Length: 166
Image (cartoon, rainbow, N blue to C red; front, side, top):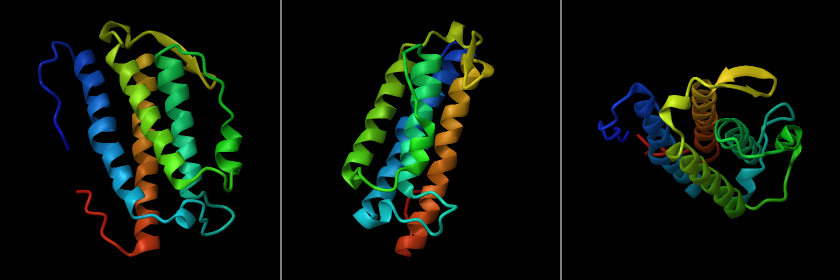
């Protein structure tokens, strides 16, 4: 894991930098490594009807980042169709999905780069929850890591390979 610059002068600034570093320099490269091992068929494979395919998880991760950070913390207008994230069973290719999640992570990084640390305690309402901007960022970064772990596990199940991500 890449450390932060350690030049921040406030805990809020360090939190924002750490969030950016974790997403851009830790989570996204691990997702790309997983992606490199997947076939087109692996993206929409489900072990059973109650489980989500990797493609669904990626759509959901993008929707969550857009709603909680780009829309919530960043204030950009965003309309989300959360049920479609889970009901989709095909359509987007492996390459298109990877491009979508990488572009979403870049947009999140730009929002966080411009986020003033002194606004982290400002109140927001997201999905009906009353949270602070700090809470929204923390939730979205943690949520991405949670689903990245699920994806890594499925990749190991599908390929039988060590991901070599640690």
